[in-house]
Length: 520
Image 1 (cartoon, rainbow, N blue to C red):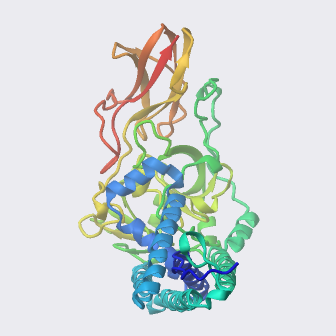
Image 2 (image 1 turned 135 degrees about the horizontal axis):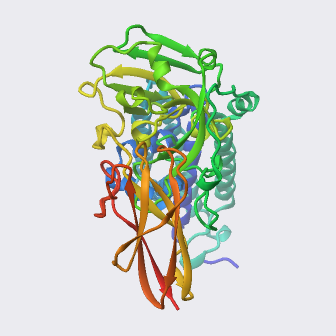
């Protein structure tokens, strides 16, 4: 049946036009970035800029809310925002051309600025964003033109859609669908080629780790408590936390890896992988923690690391008098400032190549990363490290210290309740257990408090070393009612854990972990 009713323009068409145009532009940008650099990808360049320039409160909220999934949340949020703005651009282009095209072009300009802001960027980094904007504008104008022409087709050939809106024409649907399929295919191809880890994974699979001249002492049986639900003494590689600013994991091979040591040194050194493997390696268990780890959080892990002592690597260049800062740089441009005193004071600071008996996982720094006991990761644990500059705190700042975080970053004395989860439990014996850490000082004891009463000693597992966490447990004879259980640690110097809560910024959280239980 035909209708003489004059249909209104279908708003769905311009919205779809904008979203499809944005997707086509992003796909074109991914393809165009292949011969330039992964950092030139408009989507990832803008994402990296968001990470770099986000206020500290936003960053902390993201880590607290999403934890190790913060990057996935960022990508999804960016995708949703781009889709909304693209739909608006399509609507504007339909009603007030060329405003929508200008909006797409502005987004291309944002990509240009973000790409040129990446470390080591050159003018060619701008090209993928320019191409993305051009493709987006062209696709937008083609699709909007089809929407507009479809609105004025002869009434005898046009059915009136819902609410009097003209239905989308077959030509528009085929064009938009074809562009969408092509954009998805090209985007996937481009992303796989830009983030291709095949060569790195093959290199890692071939790697045979050297035997340490000083293996880690075996873990005594008493180091592990036989309590269900307590965190294992050793964290598996796939369970180890990962917090960093790398939206794209750097892909390095041992053949291509180099470390340049320069600055306030007696002689500049460039170290190759073969040079590093020729040096004596040691193996140590070390607990690492992220400064963003809140009270009771899980951004901490313990692993067996294999590597060359960092002081031996630093001695190759010779540190000049007065230098007190090692400014290390990752392959993705992230920088970290480590006190040279923490490398030279005898602690097991390692230039690590192995983790729990395997080569480093790619996402944990393959082929080389730093491990420094006693310091939060943002001032010590550089992954994918390729550059060392020996300098002074008075002359240089690293990525996070330039954003207001503490320059030294010693790990705070802390403890955590791992089990049982908050909830309802029958009266009687309840086993409470968890972990405690006092990096490079050692935990002396752990105490538990019920409902604000007296602190009572918990059973403490054997200490492996001052650089690893310790497990603890407390057997509670629970009476019916609602209860609050708190835990605190005391270190080897007799200092108790700080009870007053402070958020992670700028130098690590303080406060007591607590759990609430209803006993029936």
